[in-house]
Length: 136
Image 1 (cartoon, one colour):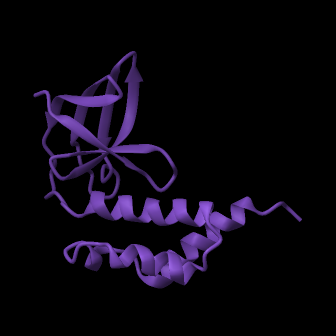
Image 2 (image 1 turned 45 degrees about the vertical axis):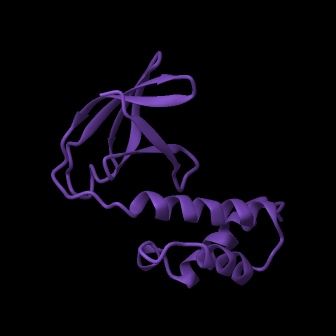
């Protein structure tokens, strides 16, 4: 099992990995071995786990335990798109509508139904920019 796992940024700025259509969050680290658990471990009581070896800046899948729910192929792409929108909000001073439109135009058709609403994306952009403001 030496499959390379794709790294996806989480909402909180940490890393997740995508393994066989499932998103996993980091649970433990010991030297170059990482243990990951399913992101739905609390909401759906999922016992899915994965173990990876980290070398050459890549995570190689070592062990994988099955989940009790079906995978969502689009969840990783949605997380990447939202992270890209947040990064643009942090780096540019474009209006939220411009950032959202520029990113949604480039999305594949199969992902767009799973994206958050434009209002939710606009609020995320405002929250990112609010953290940059000096306190009053």
